[in-house]
Structure formats: structure tokens, C-alpha cells
Amino acid sequence: MLTLEEAKKYLRVDSSDEDDMIQQELSAAESLVASVLRKDSLNDENGPIIVVAVLYALAYLNEHREEADHHALTITLRNLLFGERDPKF
Image 1 (tube, one colour):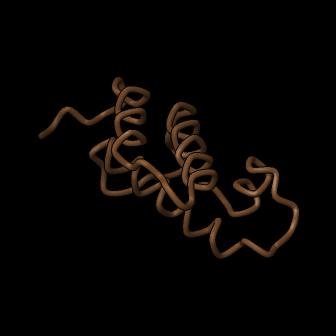
Image 2 (image 1 turned 30 degrees about the horizontal axis):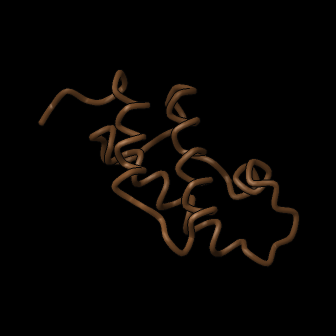
């Protein structure tokens, strides 16, 4: 959905030293957002709120590398994406 370059620009990272870590965090953020949305995966047709959610999750995971509270992150994403979630259970 987002490229590594877009993620690095958002995180304000200029060097390529952490490219692998940022790519892993981006993949985790996209997977988490897809899970909250109850979808198999994200695509380029997603709305801007979904992009914002992925960027938020990416920034959270990047900043809290050592002590990320995944439960709190998931709750925040559920609140942010409530109107976009698939209603199936």
C-alpha cells in the first residue's frame, strides 16, 4: 500500500541504515490495520483514513520499538477505523 520511501519521508528518516526495520514495521502496520478492518489485505483503493491509520501505526511502532503496547495501539486503530470496518464477525 505504502512504499518504503513514503514511510521514510513520513518518519523523517534520511539514511538507509534502518530500511529493513522500517519495512518490517510498515508491513506490521499494514497487517494490523487490515486485521482491524477485518480484511485479508489492503490495496491502493483504500480511502485516506486508512492511509492515516497505517501511518499512525507505523509511527507508533517505530517510536515504541522496545515497549510497544499493542493492545492500546489496536484499540486506537479500532476507534479510528470504526466506520470503515467490515461488519462481519
